[in-house]
Length: 136
Image (spheres, rainbow, N blue to C red):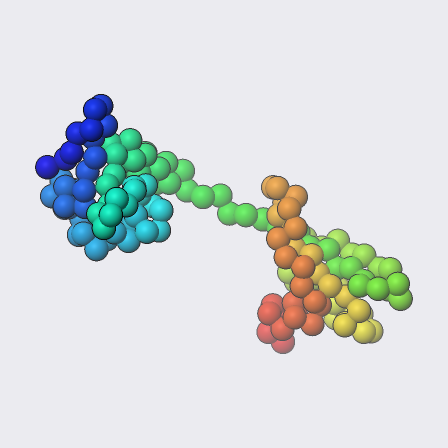
């Protein structure tokens, strides 16, 4: 039975299990992962009506609009004063080709940049990049 505190209605794991038919273990996992917002009072979890509503609205949004695939670009860049070369690449294959044209790969690094946010996602040594992406 949900508990009323003033205008606030709190649902326990048992309440949600009965209402939604979801296992108690799954509900606890959702709460620990933050997928469902709740608060632990003592040893018991409690969830508000708003948190339940938010969970279902969030689920509806993710089903309605699939996530857009992120796209990246790459910058191959010298890592010291001996090599001032910088190459801009659109694909992983372009990066691999550019790196293979270099005499000393250890003098280069690769920056992975998110095209939408312009954020640098990763900076990786050229050798590590090739180990990760080049199967030849």
